[in-house]
Image (cartoon, rainbow, N blue to C red; front, side):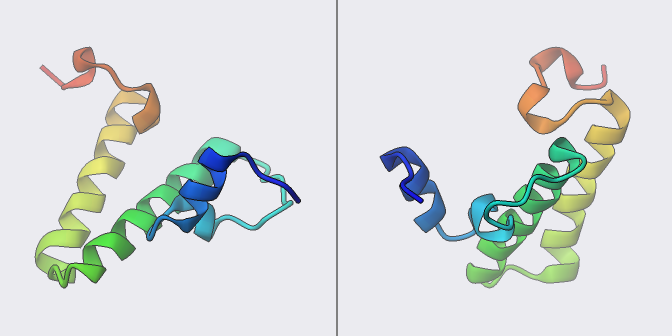
Length: 85
């Protein structure tokens, strides 16, 4: 399959969500699947920097999940008005 250059660059980026998603598979719930892949890729990037799993990575992931639950929106839908104030 031929991908545009921007997709190839994303695929090659360490921790890319595209590395986690199965090629050619259409998920039943695309938004939650992309969120899960995005968070997994972000966690991989943080591990590559040798950040502490319990002290740094897990709290950061939990914060994003809480924000998703609080706003009812995915990170790519957030605006500055979603800061909880």
